[in-house]
Length: 137
Image (cartoon, rainbow, N blue to C red; front, side):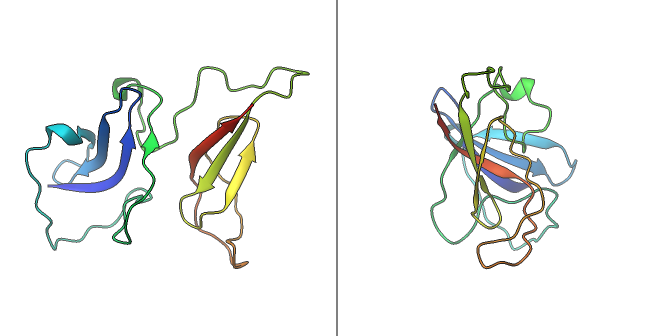
């Protein structure tokens, strides 16, 4: 029994389902092509992380930049090797989308942590994690 949170794609093109084992509370990842079967239950759970999976339809599948073994917190946006822009060059710009309200933010560093902000309707948003969208050079 798991609590599902996120679906991501690796560099190799494999899809990973991230979740928490309900009985132990441990963070886990499962390769979708190796899942033999699944059953939806009516058992509810209190979310420990921001849930990226919804019943509203298809959601964009995010990429995983590092191996799972190297990632302690699998629910954070992965960071590339170089996070600082080179001085004078302007460097790449990273775009992140708030996973709660959908508002986009452009940054000079690859950091998906979001400050307090308002949603598109002008109300305070509870989202504090941004999903990586694209890099502009």
